[in-house]
Amino acid sequence: RELIAAESTSDSDDNTSEDQQVETHADSQVCRFLKVFVKSKNTWATVSWFFGVGVLVYHEDFCPLEASYFITQIVTTIGYGDICVKDDWMKLFISFFILGMLVMVGFILNEVVSSAVAKEAERMKTNIARVESLADSVNASVGQTLSGPLEEIKREEEVVENKKNKSSGRSHSQHKLIFATGLFGLYIGAGTIFYSTMEACSCSYGATAVPDCTAENACKVGKVKTPLDAFYMSVVTLTTVGFGDYTPATPVGRLFGIPWMMTGIVAAGFFVTALQDVLMNDKTEKSRKDRTLEAVEKMTLDIFAKMDMDGSGGLCMSEWVSFMLVQEGLVEQDSLDRLSRIFNKLDRSKNGIISWEEVEYFQKKRVAAMM
Image (cartoon, rainbow, N blue to C red; front, side, top):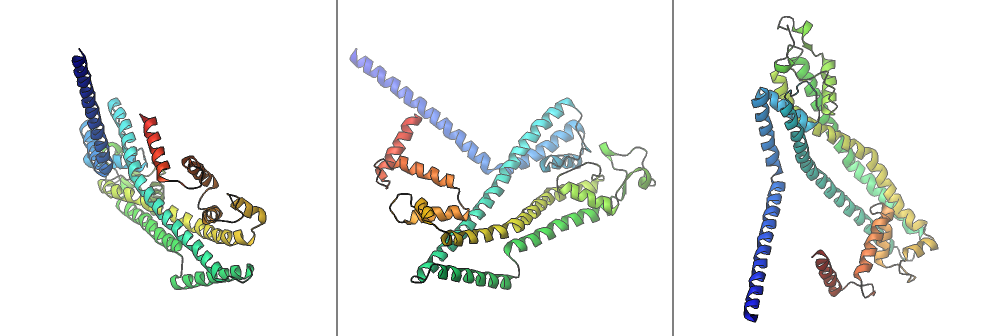
């Protein structure tokens, strides 16, 4: 009986192990699929685009150009409203299609944001290097009064800044704004010239065709775009406002509009970002420099005691760096406090040092809590 019971227990353990392996394999398959999906999001977006075009052509009798033009309005969130679906099932399909496309666009925008965050991290490294240079300058001036080296550092920074401005003529943010303004102006100008020329007078076609309009009376009863109208439409379109009072009306106008809208809204976003950088960056950089020097100039015994977190009567490197990061505006005090609390939880021996054994203990504890 004992042997039978042991064998039965062994069989059940084997079955459990096999089930766990199957579940683990299934989980790994799901994870692998999700990774592939994330990595191929651009492919999925392209496939979804053509799928939407096919559905619109088949169910709504749109021509491929009209369908592509319609989906471009969805992706860019412009939404002129000149072309719409009429069938109830198509309205349901478009509702879910919009949500799906926005998710995919969100993935792509997330990559853009991640790239911007990486650039900000590089900027943070530059600022930290500047603080380090400040500390080196102070150390090299040992024996002088405190105000002496600080004033010298200020003068040195002004000299370096003046040399940089003379050599480049303008700051990086100003160069960026000039380029962004030119690029955005190019898109506005292209739209203005194209639509005021190619669609000065049009009867349109398909769902937006003007009744009783012919080539002879198009300028009287058809859709008319003056240069001012075309400029107005270009600004409204590329800023994704999309009133819908002026829209591309001809096949060639919609064919031109698809890439023009897709890339033009990117140029508009680039222009707005560059303008914000110029308005805020110079002020932020100046305030950071001022805070760095003023933090030392106006340091009092109370501030010193606040920086001395362990109460040793002196400042270690970590205390100095933490304080200066907050002064520079690079880190919030709440973030440093949270990191300190995590450190104290890991430091089980309370000796101010985290050992590998303590890290390993924490890892095992986390694994046990998750099971």
